[in-house]
Image 1: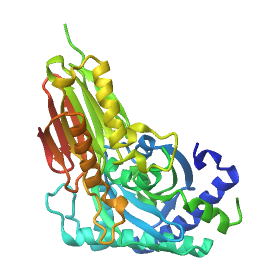
Image 2 (image 1 turned 90 degrees about the vertical axis):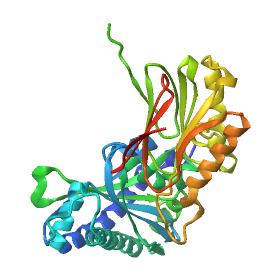
Image 3 (image 1 turned 180 degrees about the vertical axis):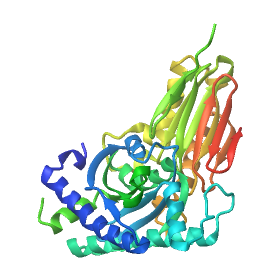
Image 4 (image 1 turned 30 degrees about the vertical axis):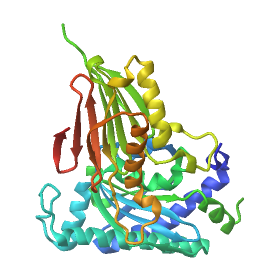
Length: 209
Length: 165
């Protein structure tokens, strides 16, 4: 069938390492930005059907805050930085000092949204540039887009490229927690979804065929 | 006597049929389109969740036919008739096809919402199934639920409440 079933465990490890390097750097940026400790879990590489993909963030109905960007260059793909609305609110409170920002209000303040946009931009940018340094592959991020909507509606967009070739997605997923808020179990995710043709380039650049 | 009703969930690139009093639901439609075909007097309905407009553009041989508007609608019409629906009585309602992202230099794949809507409208037309109501386009995700006994399609969007068409 498709290339996804032919992946070796060595190749999966490479993908995991890619996620580790990218999100490690991104978590450091986040920690600096918030002036807090951030806990990062070991990335997982998952091969999931489209429906299962939505379950990672709590099902297709779940409202999520996401910063999405397309990766252009030699190894195109999609990238998401996903937060729950509660955690996104906290980010805004922390950075701006504006404790009134809330997604329950019908009108969201420009400033709050702008902050989230920029946080996503910085983190995704860090992730990508460390990835690009590591693999020596030319990758450029598009202008990121901030969306607050249903998980299914947002994530399916990242699956579009893949869906032309396969019914499964390879998702490099890193979960992180705000260290001081672990009791609340708030989680954020980085998802990296390389386009089908990018896998060969990534593996080739790191000497794994 | 109590009547238990069941919500039949339709996944991504999936197709299901339900009879009254059960309802059909698919969640988180972005640029995907939810297509409902129903025979109101028999209270039977089928729903498909299509992702892409055209199966002939696929690079694969053994493709999932339910993913594409053209092949999914063909199967949907056939499945409805297999389930006893009468072809002349079939009506359709559609929702979805939003443009979730607005990249200035968007690649074609990011405008897939509009192309999905066009493909769905065209292929329903090929089978002479009239579209009685639709809620398409825009830039919001939708969760839709269809009730075969009333023929109403409930549409829910984030922060915008519910509408029925």
